[in-house]
Amino acid sequence: MKLTNLRFGWLLGIAVCGCGGRTTPVQRAGSEFSEDQLRGQILGFQDQVVAHLEAAGDYTPTGDTGTPGVDEWEIALPRSESIVLAGPTLPEAELSVVAASGQALATVRSGDANKALALEPGRYRVRIRNLGTETRYARVALVGGALEAGLATAPWPQFHANASLTGLGTGSGAAGRLKWSFRTGGAIVGSPIVGPDGTVYVASTDGQFYAIDSKGTKKWSVPLPKSNNNLAVAAAIGSDGTIYAGSGAGGVLALHPDGTRKWTFACGAVNGGITIGPDGAITFGSADQNVRALNRDGTLRWSYPTEGDVPGCPAVGSDGAVYVVSAGGNGYAINADGSERWTEVNNSPRFASPVLLANAQMIWVTGDSLYNENVFSGQFQNWFETGGYPIWTTPAIDRLGNIGFVAVGPNGYSGGGTAIDLYSLNGGSVQPNWTTVIGGNSQPSTSSPAVDTAGVFTVGTTSGNLVAVNPDGSTKWTFATQGPILSSPAIGHDGTIFVGSTDGFLYAIE
Picture 1 (tube, rainbow, N blue to C red):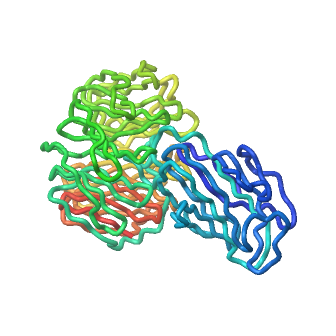
Picture 2: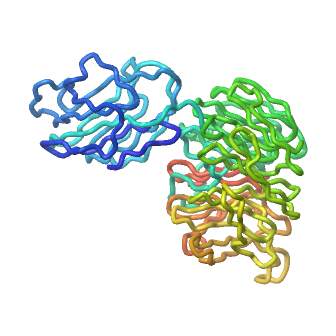
Picture 3: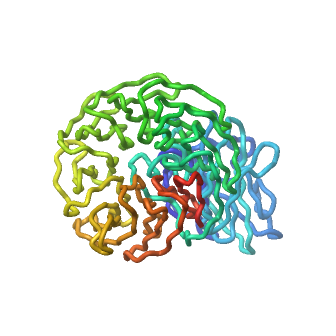
């Protein structure tokens, strides 16, 4: 098992070290202990333990600290953390985080998907259990960097899934069946986000911001200022569980996980998403022609003026640099301290958000074209043109680097109106893999596609359908709602698709 160092969370994992002996760790994480060294010690989140995980009923080796079949070690959290339990790769094993009371807070077994949870400061126990009949060694590794800031470790903690805005989820498998729906008092035009525990957060034009649990039941709602363009934005969840929501009437609201107000920040209308950078900066653009970064306490870190409204969501790199476009046509690269890196001047209004790629590259969308640009120099090239079909929404990037995006143009296929085409480009050669007509009406949709781990792209249309397209361009399924879908879908850990509709419902599609 390769032990992964998560950027914004801790990973608790089990790895096989070999029966009857040990192997060199794949990744060293602080100190390594044998279980007989741990009497009375409290581990930190840079340590790992090699345990003799005997089968139930088997002999107990000298110095074993646990009961047959089960081993536990105490860990200490100095602050609130978001924890991810990695499904054990050791066959027939179980990994749990246990509270001081003895209650198991989260458990994963071999073959399970990762499971996330938020923990308050205090002491906890990591428990591993042998579910099989063989005795073997297991390595329990607690790895990760300091969790001071950044996005929550969650399936979809902000618009388009992550700070790079790739739109790539962590699950797959939705088959187009309704799992549940939740009705609000207005249209849903913004994008839902999904928290570590599966809670879905979304705003409605009824002026309410909702938290809906994984079964479709309302946990709470809070009022936000109303406007005619209210709440077309997506919120974001910080690593400490704080939820940040913007308003089309102006300002940003920070909420505790229980929905109580933490602070508010006054500014112009926030018509795009919010991104949280690796240094904790809460970054967004607004209609008063500024990009801002706030500190976690709601104070202003910096403000950068733009030429025109900022309709999209900022992309933020691993170095904290911010990339954003304006309706005035310019593209901006802003250093983490708020100073200018470069500005690209363009006469065409831009509405889609930029997407960060590997190798210091990014994608801009202008009119009917995709541009590839170097994030450091600002040098760019015209990658691909649709031939006059404008691109209004943010592309998504699958695990293979293919680029999926939606273009709107004359419908030569059915003799009138417009067609919505979903393109897939090979990111290496920038050549079309396929183009699929997904339908629509005369109004362009603001729904940006999402892509799951199987390479299935899902997007909403103005005809009211949520359409899933297979990696080969064939339609996998279509789910009909009772109003145009302007909301961008989000993907849960288990592949469930969450999307809002102008019919007022939030839909969960499995």
